[in-house]
Image 1 (cartoon, rainbow, N blue to C red):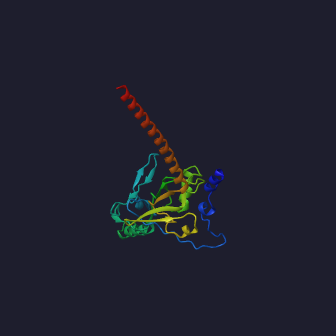
Image 2: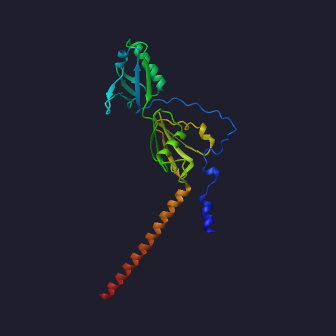
Image 3: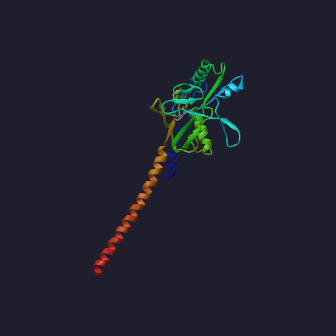
Length: 260
């Protein structure tokens, strides 16, 4: 009977563990469009200028020698005031712009300055990363293309854990219905709980990740109960040892008095 009860409590229902378990495969859902990322303070930007006359473009592209012996374009870090220093154009306010808007702004400034009319600019955020803490796949995960959904993170985190033990793996150590997402926007911290069990996540503002998002994964009730049982086990052992020491101390004290 005890074994049957333990088996029943260890097994969960579909609604507790299966991702998107309420998704109707026979229904079409209108998905939200992915919004282009806004540039934030601390972002690293790779900005490349091209022109039909390469000599005109080279004066804007800062090249550095790599350890492999080749050359690469340096990146520009957005400072605490939201600016970068760009060759020949000095300081540019880039915070709050998308990469597309930044490309158009630099192209226009180059043309207006008469430096290289018709130049093409390409801009990209190179340090897109998301931090996961708590149960499961704790770590920092980077996405080179700057585009990621919550399920991209799940797949990447599980791969990093060797499969089966991450956010959506076979282990029952996390709560899939209560995952905290924290996001900084213009100096303000926004946060909300999301559930991977419902299709509602597909329409959440946190479905598409942003650079520097922090994800906290809650432990499951099973994990908490297991942890409590371990603590209770050692506390009971400590209590036994403490009692034994007290008894020995008392006996030694009484024996010493008799000897005197």
